[in-house]
Length: 277
Image (cartoon, rainbow, N blue to C red; front, top):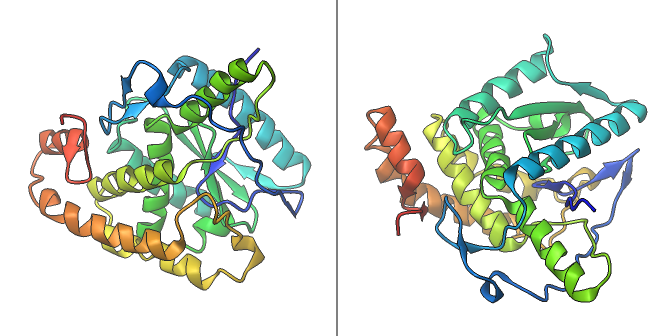
């Protein structure tokens, strides 16, 4: 049997044919990283539970993305992966700049744009990040760079595989199929915020301005297109405050960048996370 957690989004109004899908609950976590031999996250130096090799993540996520894109097309949505579409060219430029400054720069990550009004971007943990025009058209370049960094950070930190690993362990414990519809924990979201902020900053974007993204979301809170699963993620206000603090903490380190070696150094160890602790 293949184990694949389905896509996990930064902006959580999942939609199929115009109908909002309610969040599915995962099974109770019976075994945590503390219960198994420790494995260290290569980015943040934190313990993690990750039983799924990267090659398998990539293969299964690719299959899931293919099926998802076909579903979009059958629903009459335009899926844009290249060409001269102005909206896609902008997204690809920003995404590529952030990608090149990330831990995933050696993997061929791809941005995919779906023409729909929902305010959403997500990854299934493989090589693709899916963005909706309802998000990209409402954000400044700096804000969009932060979203791109956040989603790339989810891939780099292996958050989809971590959730899938918990499902595998708990399925074995129960002797039945676990819920494979995963969502990121608050800790994973905060971690992706920190890592993604570094990626966007190293790509030359104004992360102080980007932190206002969450203030913008707060203004849209009454719009059904911006329905968030607030029980599993930090509030807009909390994320805005955290990113403002993170930006201040990171600023002195950014001023030390003079060469590519300095960028590599900050990817390994900076005020927001450090794999060399």
